[in-house]
Image 1 (cartoon, rainbow, N blue to C red):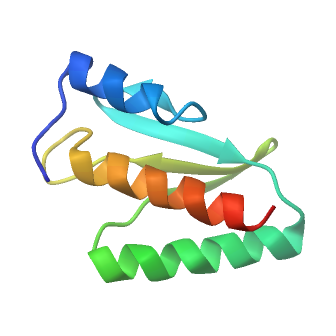
Image 2: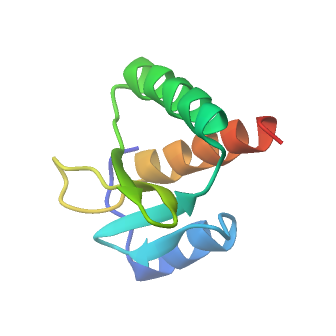
Length: 96
């Protein structure tokens, strides 16, 4: 699960994750939520990240909270990042 994705593999993965963007170096998504929901989402993501020992970079931006994923030890996007992106999407969907 920690094999680097090539451009074709990443394009296929991103076609299933329409809110995510990026390249083989990293993928990201910005989510705008009310402060309480944002806190809940961040806490849930922290729990998932600890469970799978794979942590996103979380940035506060003017547009919302930006989640950036890549596998540091591999130097790019792997299947692990795609799986975590899907989990983040599922957690976000549960808040709506």
